[in-house]
Length: 306
Ligand SMILES: [Zn+2]
Image 1 (tube, rainbow, N blue to C red):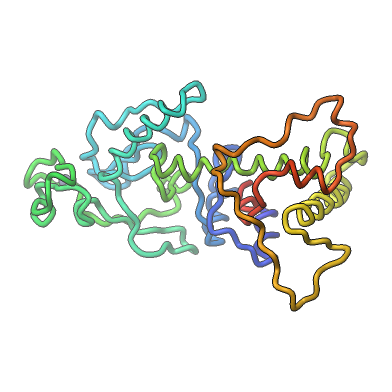
Image 2 (image 1 turned 180 degrees about the horizontal axis):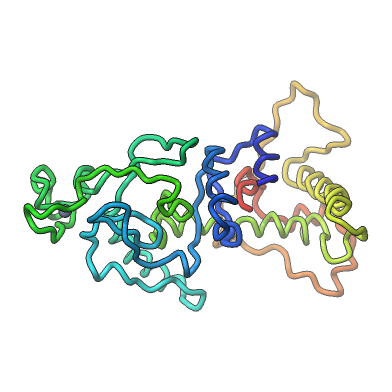
């Protein structure tokens, strides 16, 4: 939270954070609530303990993997496999489409949250026209070809058309915009790996941050020395990617030169550098070699990934 507050103080308030499970599994008072109060959303992976089906806040609702659904969520969509590291990317994409099938049954946010009280209103899927429920005649007039029809019994109360307010005690820490496991969630949370480019800039391409890079004891002293390494890395990045020499900065009236966009997608981009070996480790880093070996230019997104 200290890092987040430092970003806010600098005028770079993140709108969304893709945090590691080590943070998001903390008690909500330690992480989810302070973020919410600062107006920051999060997309999170769920711990095994946070997954599964649980009773919802009112009759006729259930929590499935942190998201709020109507009880009409079909049984076949309840106990889905969790994605694992052993799965191929095709298998994971296929699994995500199974989670996508849950989406129509989910409650969706209504209006803005009350950040002080930690509350948010949610509307049932029949009022938003995402499912057809026999208890809501307007929804039954929608096309059955484009939306699922729930198995609700007519005249038996269901929650498909209700509005519910969730408070800080209602699965607060596991609620998120995209539903866990869906294609949308996968695309959003998958951006976490981008932080590895920033880490690689510090460790390999522009700096040599490693064990014994600093030789002082204590967090504060280490932080001060780390600041020099990070500053040097940033300076090297500025020269190689933006031709901006902080020792000889361009005049104020000169328009900044944007970095050339890379036409190839990150997936197909040729890896122009190799792993550091004992032999190459001794070669001193220069701005020129950095230019040939660095990855995509840093964006503010990196700052948002912790
Ligand atoms: Zn219903």
